[in-house]
Image 1 (cartoon, rainbow, N blue to C red):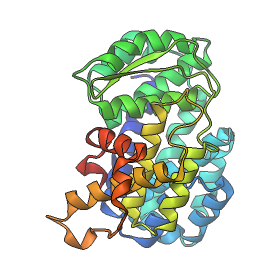
Image 2: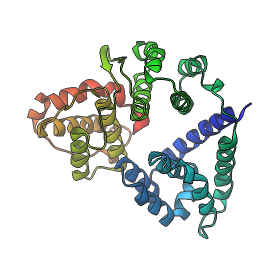
Image 3: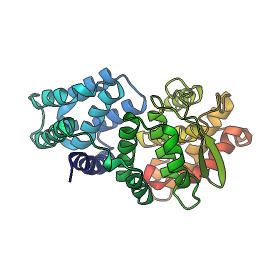
Length: 322
């Protein structure tokens, strides 16, 4: 097994552990706070400061999740070269729980091996990518995205992967959640490696053509900002707030090339209210204490935002998001 393959397997396992911690310890205040800062897209310096301030609890309950967030901060700001030094600095913290030392050292070791590995793209061949797509899972997603990133960095064009992935994107039998999740990851890569050809994506018997041409900025998008502002004003529970963020982001990515979507106050509010209503219907039978009371006018049901959310619910609204 070469170093890249070992790195991929390590990260797949770590992603699974991080996801489990996210679910198991979502009731821990500091873990909730970390996820909220990520969802709110706080500055990397703010999140790093939060991790250092709450290092004892975060690394006691969710070490794998915390390290993945920690690494993502520097990757997002193109400061990957700092990651090993930053992880080494964590080991010097006096309040770092003993159980975290092994986890951090494992990351340092695998990242050092990756840095010194002989360049190779055999693990990221078209056949390897298609093999992972055919057996796609949350763990395989990280392998696919890493493979695409390596190929793009070595000169391959995004349009090549449009052709490679379109059979998956257009297949009626493939889970739309994975299509949307992959599209979101590709949109992030498209900020450096834009496409000129469209992905043909079949969702709920509707075909969407999406050209990832770097014309969309999720940081400044009026719709996503309005949804975030309204959901924060409601003081939603953490689970419901996370659901709102995921739901709106996946809806928006399908309309990547549109300048505006649901750009009236009534449309944004009715979009959010439809989701809360569906959430309440889902949880009231097994967790009535989680119902979030949100009255809204009947006229909202006639708004485009409510209708769009209702149409999209059975795609994104799954029990695993609750």
